[in-house]
Image (cartoon, rainbow, N blue to C red; front, side, top):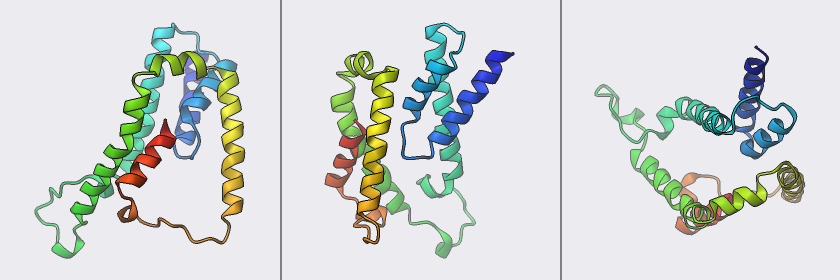
Length: 166
């Protein structure tokens, strides 16, 4: 029964951190240090994948009408239809932004996992990047954002965004 409560706690942490500009995976690594699930390593890896997939699925379901590029409704009025071309373009930019992670992340995945998937590195990174986020936010108070719409993201910007995801 206690393992079920721990799993619920993991779900709550994942559900909250998935929506914030912080590492949900990092928080799962730290939580596992303090609230260790009594399961095999293989099961825990599968559990992490499933719980993160659940959080991503919640986002997809919430924004389904805005991100689904097909208009399957035959009754949809012309003026109410979402511009599907913009949605396809958004998906194209998402695809482009994943390229740096594929090119850099996949070949070095095992190395990155061995070096950085531990509580010391994760805690340090969360603190450093958290301070960085706060500094950038404070520095930009009152400034108008350069990008205010997905339409303004070009291929170069998508690659830069992807590089920061690596």
